[in-house]
Image 1 (cartoon, rainbow, N blue to C red):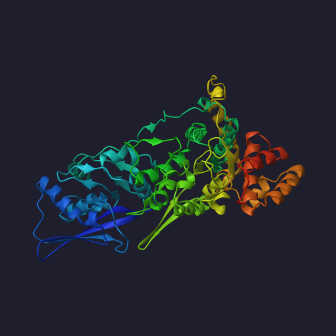
Image 2 (image 1 turned 90 degrees about the horizontal axis):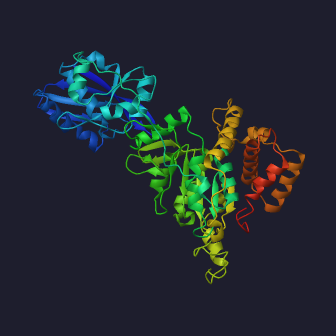
Image 3 (image 1 turned 90 degrees about the vertical axis):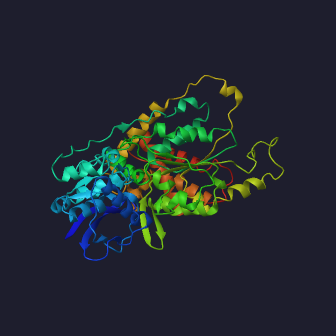
Length: 506
């Protein structure tokens, strides 16, 4: 008798339906799993054998073959344990084989039959809902998978509960979504004294998702400013929260089914490898740029990253997605993130302070920032200097705007963009606009056009740089609640490309 149980294999954030086919045939007693399994899947037969033994279910002295179809799709992970066990139980006649046709299952088995949490329950629930099937997953994953409203999710704690559910002895209740995890660790921009220009740039970056480069001496507040950016960004929309959580589910970062509406904030160390930043490694896992999807990627000590890491950022910044190419698979992940990079002006960090700078001034600054290639530098919409704050200013009481006040303006600007781009599904914010759409929404008035022409000629702006100025100007106009882009908006947008010093990259 051939029994079938459905499960999933992960290809990026997409869960592809896989069928576990089990057959008992005459021959020497054996238990084989075929269909391009990795080591963890091949070892499932021992976990399944032990789990069934703990339930006093003995395997017959026959040849047991489990095929994971399609056979040419690589299978990896321990979540194949439960579907293999269910297909075997159906082949033994213990559970009805026809009931398995309407269910997708995943979960790891302990040797005593307990179901252990696995990664990827959320995308698996999406796949099950698209096939009009129920999802059977371990109890710790139920709250996570239940966020997919169209899916029927059942979460047994043990293999025994799963058997009793399929045999109608004790049907399981549907799992309920977990709590939305609040983010109570947000820091307030009011704590930052001085740096009003940098605060304004952060507001513009948050409103239009514009990439920003901060250059300043050590201790000037670059990291402090970046850490407060999530506090002024709008919460994730339900669609964005689900999309982001699917990536975090694959990475095993969701706690007890809690989905956060706060935007991700990732800050990798400058010694991180290409695979850690972009994605890859065993199983082509998502990297930091994908884990920061719909959120912030903060890269401190930007020139200290290996050049190979920096250059791999160029294509994802433009396209909003990354393809992790390996010999046996090409895995695609979304990565629409806001990049905030921070750097010292030179190796010693005190280029602008003659009494503290090294003897190689000014060549040390040119050499140090020269590690950032021209094409990568051109992808930063906002580039500004963060000067040191005088100790006398630090002694003054905080009197600037709070993050809540700035966030209110950002939310209003984002709402304006959402309405503007409603007919364009692939465009969410001003930073995504390009081509004819950008020319339509960011066309400056006559004075602004003349100003932009002079600036483009004097600075030698590339086509990319020219369009990025227009995008920033459009965001500034949105923050000012202006229907059109005026000369004052162009001037402010251009000013954020002039404050670093001699521009050797344009």
